[in-house]
Amino acid sequence: MDGAADAAVSGRLGRMRIVLVAGLGLAIGALDGSVMASAMPKVLEELNGVDAFAWTSASYIFMSVVCGPIWGSIGDQIGHRVTLRIGFVVLILGSILCAGAGLRPIGAEPALGMVELAVYRAIQGAGSAALFVSSFALLAENLSESERARYTGSFSVIYAICTILGPAAGGLLADLEPVQAGPFVISGWRWIFLVQVLPLFACWSLIGRAPHDRQRFDWHGLDYRGIALLALGLLLLMAGAQGTQDIWNGMLRVGVFVASAISFALFLANERVAARPIVPATFFTSRVMLFSALAGMFASAALLGLVVVLPIFLQGELGRTAAASGVYLAVFSVGVAIGAVGSGRFVARTGRYRTAVIAGIFIVICGGIGLILAAGMGPWMDKAALCLIGVGFGPLQGTYGLIAQRSCGSRAHGAAGGIVQLCRRIGATLGAFLAGLVITAEGPQLAGLADSPATSALLLRCSALCAVLLGAALALSCFLPNRLGAAEEERTT
Image: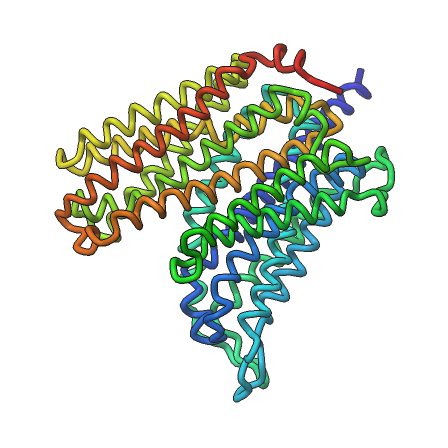
């Protein structure tokens, strides 16, 4: 009995260590993705390179999206603990390189400093993708369904908090006084990357060595054609969505999006015949896997569309200051955290996945109606409506990923998580682009912002856009199974 008790205690400690490392890895990954937002003016001042400015963030996003399914596929074969350790090493390497980007002796000109930073941020993006995908895959492998649902809600809160704190922490570090070390001057923004190294190394040490229960990875069998098509489609999508009006006009922009769609179609066609695809076969054979990924994509598009237009509405229609807009967004994030934790506990207790996401969508719709009706009724009513919208978006953050992983079988948790992450990123890009089109259409009338009737029209148009996107997510969610057992029956091996 003592041996069995010791084994049970050891198993619980091992699971808690995995949860701890996965949570820390997710927190560091979230901070790493947002921490540079407020520090970029300082970076630009030192490194110049305005032409490469946009690529410092675009390269990070691009690599984090493309590498997600790849890390998931590799982890399903060699073990996600191994890919998580590799991700920590890659992120440590990228952080050290970013800290030294454009570092020259005093008096020397950092000619390619911004280009170096963009390349090194791409390395960080690849490591961050491993942290996100492997962390959730480890939870799926080592925790029960109810535990996984509960911790997924908590992790969504960690991600939301770290995303909010990232720019603030980056701004504080960027404002530090430069320190001279021999012939070099270490600016404050470089500490953003240096302070990450020790926590990353601690996480790498905590995760421990993986048991040798998986086969060695065959690099020659990797689906390089699929990776190339996925990267091309995503690159074209980002170029078309983020290009300026001077560059992408009319048919040229349409052509870029058509080429991106063709590339994604060829990628999916290739995955159906590839010997070892990076997209699990259940994506094509399981309705649950396909619908949960697509529903997550539409929900992310609605969320990003709202986040893009919300500050304009707050400062224009409601007359709030920029600082007050930040407070409103913080209230929205608190609502997301409440909804994520509440839905996680609800799913853990009842196992009703579909109920959680459908309820979340209806709460978002009710909050949106409340925000429109509450305009001009005082800041507390506006904040309450925004918090309600956040509560509705909370269940949509992690629940679709849980459904996808539950439907694909235990040997494809990583690939399923990578595909859901990919679809959410694509949805976020499209949502921001569509909201940008709406803002551009109202551009001449938005010049004055305050008390401009155009802001009311902007809110109505963006509300209609979000309603369409959420309607698509709702329609797909209605076809998902409601309980864990039903999802298990849909599994295709």
